[in-house]
Amino acid sequence: MLNAQADRLNNILEKTVPAVLALLSERGKNMFWPAEGILKQAAEAKNTKLNATVGIATRDDGQALTTDSLLKEFSGNLEIFRYAPSFGIRPLRERWREEMLRKNPSLDGTKITLPIVTAALTHGLTVATSLLADPGDSIILPDKFWGNYKLVFEHGFGVKLHPFNFLKKESFDLESFEKTIKTTDGKKIVLLNTPNNPTGYSPTVGEAEEIFEILKRAAEKSPITVICDDAYWGLVFEDGIQKESMFARLANLHPNLLAVKIDGATKEEFAWGLRVGFITFGNSKMCSQAADALEQKIGGTIRGQVSNCSHPSQIAILNALNSSTYEQEKLKNFELLKKRAQKCREILEENTEKFSPFFAPLPFNSGYFMCIELAEEFSAEAVRQELLKKFDTGVIATGQLLRIAFSSVAEKNLAQIFENIFEACKNLSAKSEPPQTSLF
Ligand SMILES: Cc1ncc(COP(=O)(O)O)c(C=O)c1O
Picture 1 (cartoon, rainbow, N blue to C red):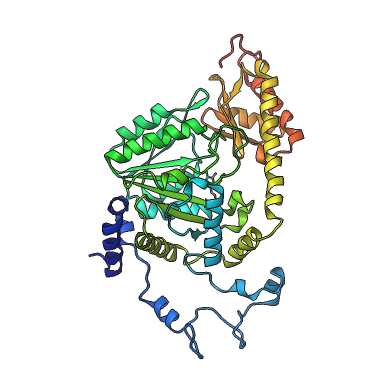
Picture 2 (cartoon, rainbow, N blue to C red; picture 1 turned 30 degrees about the vertical axis):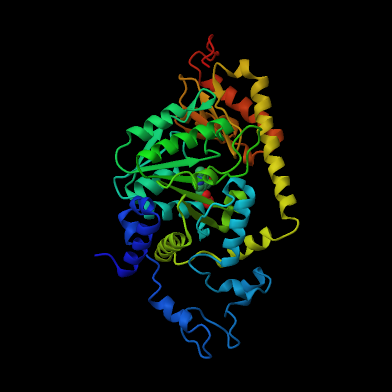
């Protein structure tokens, strides 16, 4: 039996966005914002003279009761010690939406839910999965993906990963993408991560248009959810590449398509440890009533999982976003990362012939990383070990790829990393000589 509060939200969704209701998991259908319990009573008592409902400790003057040791870390701001709402602090949610609209002009005029604060992106993905996927459902995603997806989706929720071939030579493999959507049985849930971890590839503007067409065709047949993991949003280093979030167009693409934006301060605001993320839903039939019902389901999920997210972190991000020098400060960081990406390209282009018997780069144009694909004779893990043991060099091995995080290597050291990989491959090569024919 459904809880009456969940039932009420589902009735609203049934009337306003029926396809979105159909896309919810059983857990999502059962979810509600517990407005009628302790929270309601606390809200009703908010302005009372003697309010004994608040679940924090306060000083006699009503300010948060904390310790001097902690207080001095936060320059005397007592507000931050209070709980934040489960939805996140309102000024930050509104400011984030404003930023989202500024950064993604195609969203202009599109009705979306007000972003809700999560404990960064991993938590945002957990909230989305909880509301949208049941055990046994599949998530269609690029075959080059962030390893933690396995833990979140497969191990956390019993959701299967259904990869499509991401890259075909230098391009997004549109054919594999469409075919995988068509041939996946059951509920359709797609995850797009642009810029992509691990490859650092974002679709070109032309490819993005094709992706929208494919998703529209799929939505015409049956309801479909598209989760946009925008962890690396904004770090696009080349012209002709899709800069806007895919969410911007998807949020208004088709009534049968639910677009979910998972983003946050982690990389977009260079604030990894603050743990501030956001989750936002879009659908072409979204209206205030539907948005409110969905926000309550998201808020209820967060309340049940972590109760609420870090208040000081939310205030810090809000203050930074409102600072007059902030954009300039961020631009400097962007330029630094862009120069490193360009340096990688330069090194690889200058050494194509030398490196090609051993490895070749996958296409990259954005994000934190780039990957090289090793020739078949090598095990990526063995090369990684050799790099560690003999060259004091750390990279990530995944499948036949090595992932190089130029985000965390000074430009002047990049050439040495590629040289070390070359030398490590040479050491491991069966003949200790590069093969005669280029494999790439
Ligand atoms: C693609 C992708 N999504 C999500 C995350 C998680 O971000 P957060 O630290 O905000 O949980 C990462 C972090 O590495 C990532 O690479």
